[in-house]
Structure formats: C-alpha cells, structure tokens
Image (tube, rainbow, N blue to C red; front, side):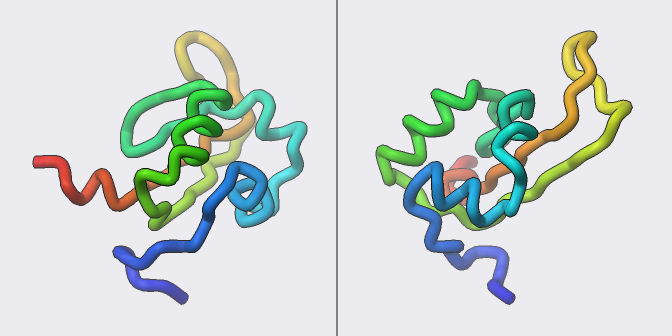
Length: 88
C-alpha cells in the first residue's frame, strides 16, 4: 500500500498497462484523463515518456452505461501525478 503522495514507479506506457491489469483491447476505447485533462492515448503515451512527473494514482472506472460526449465508453482511466499537487 502506498501513501497518496508516493510515486507508483511507473516509467512507461507499457508499465501503466501492466499496473492496471487491463486487457489492451479495453484500453483502445478508453477515455484517458491525466490530472483532470482529457487526452488521447497517444498524448498520454507521449506525456509519460517525457518523464516530467511521477504517477501517484491510477483509477479505472468501468461500466456499460458510461457516457462521454454522446458515446458509450467501456472504461475511464484516471491518472493523477505530482503535477496536480503543484497547481494552485
């Protein structure tokens, strides 16, 4: 168990996928949210590869009835980093 402000040690997108334990097929249709900002999978990959932050928390919200901009999505991936702690 980690504290809320301790890094998970995730340094790559592949490590993120492994950490979530989610099948890659599900991640293809996921809505990605990094520190409260919606991004594409490629944007998330790029930001993680820059290594300018530590990932503190990853949450998955799954369901058949989740709506996002008039489209049903199977999964939300919420990623919180130490950058969100520095925002005022």
